[in-house]
Image (cartoon, rainbow, N blue to C red; front, side, top):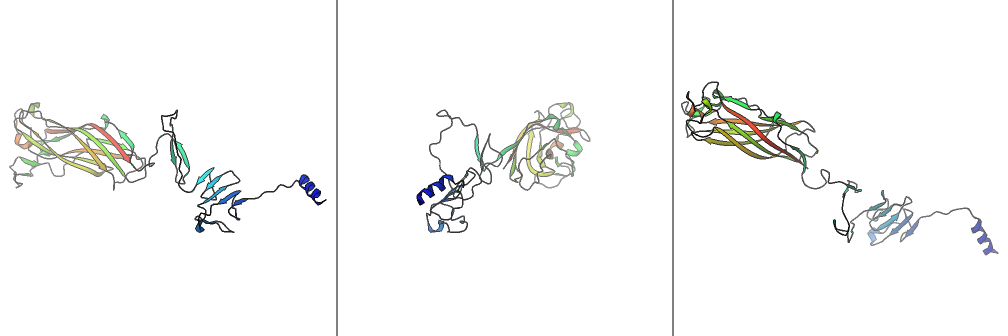
Length: 314
C-alpha cells in the first residue's frame, strides 16, 4: 500500500525540484561545481566562498550556461584562469585554411578579432604619421653680405683679427624656418621618435652669377624645432673651389627622440632652419664678376628641396 501511494504521489505531483550539483565538494557555488582537490591548499571549504587560491582546480557551469575553469564566477561563455594549450592548429595557407583576422585580447583578457594590429598591441613602435614634401610649406631665405660677414673675424689659430677673411655671421642673426609643417600624435605614450630626411640647397650667388674668382667655405647648422623647442642640431661645412658652381646640394637624415618634448594631440609644429654660422666669403669680396658684392647684396640663399617625415610611437 505504501509503495502504491508513493508512486501515485510521484505521478501527480506538480512540484519541480532544483538543486546544485557538487563533485568532490559539499559546498557547490554554481549549478555544476567540481573541486579537483589537487592539494590541501586548493580544497574548498565546507561553507562559504572558496578563495582565489582554492578555485584554481575548480570547474563550474552556471545557470547562464557559462563555463569557468579555475574560477567559480565566469563572466563570459568560457573563462579560463590560467594557461591554455591548443594542439594541431591549422597553418595559414595550408589545408584550405586562410586567416583573415588577428586574435587579440583586452586588459580583462576577453578575446576578440580585428583586421591588423592596433597601436600598443605589441612591444614595438607603430608608424602613426607620414608626410611627403609640400612646396607651399617651404620658403627660401636670403642673407646679405653684411649679415654673413660680421666684424667678428679671426685668424686660423682662433686669434681675433678684424682684418682676417674668416668671419662669423652677425651676432643675433634672425633666421626664419626654411620649411614648416604640422603633425598629430596617435598615442598617449611619451615614447616617440621622428625619422626625418631632408634635401636642401645652399646657394652663394656672385656678381654676374658666374663661377667664383677665389675658393671659399661656409659653416652652417641644420636646426630642427618641435613646438618651438630645439629637438636636434647638426653642424656641417661645404667648400667651393674657384671656378666651380656656387650651389651646394646636401642631404641629411635625422632620428629624433621626442622624450622630454611636449607633444600635443594635434597641430604640433615641426620647423627646419638652415643657419649660416661662419665663412670665408670675405676672401672673395669685390666688385668684379665672380666676386661677392658687399653691403646689402644677397650672397646666400638657403632652401629645403625635399622632406620625408615619419612619426613612430609606442
